[in-house]
Image 1 (tube, helix red, strand yellow):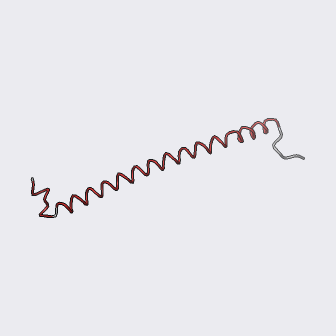
Image 2 (cartoon, helix red, strand yellow):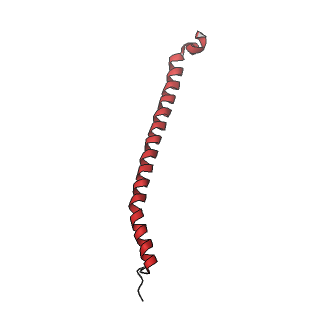
Image 3 (cartoon, rainbow, N blue to C red):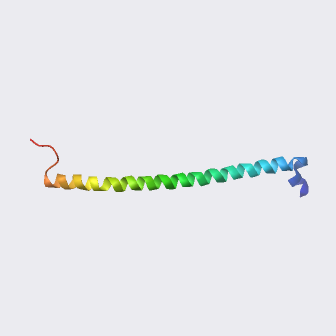
Length: 70
């Protein structure tokens, strides 16, 4: 079993490379999750800002004042 972990004397390099790879993948995943969360928050804000304008436009269309006058 120790021969497997020793990797013919290169175990430190081999397992260090595996550790570095998985560590960087973990960092990448965490950054992507944070970026996704920030993007969803931003989209939510934009939709909330847009909703009053859309409601006002819809009510003006119902009243017949769509902005185009003869």
